[in-house]
Image (cartoon, helix red, strand yellow):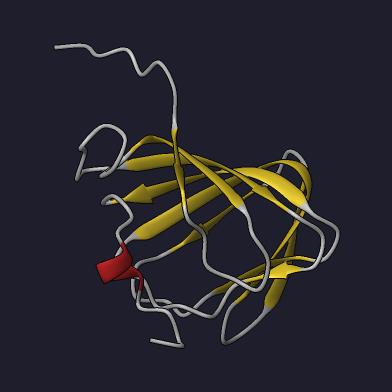
Length: 119
């Protein structure tokens, strides 16, 4: 079976500022538990709490710079670069100057499996 996804669903974001999350494939927009694919538009100065998710996350930066902090290092992911974060690893994302990126989560993202620090 094939399905056309005509438009994303806007998902409420976590963090200190509003970020636009357009979920194309995932638990909300396509009722998919296996994978989620979302486009993120993050404003300058945005940061979210650290998290220890139960899913792997793969992120491709389309514009700007995404800062990805782990317990061991802090990486700057620029336009055209990607980053992989394994399930169970603590991570924190922020965008000092704003960024646009695609996030893919396996299995699909859910609020119950992200395990943010402030929970």
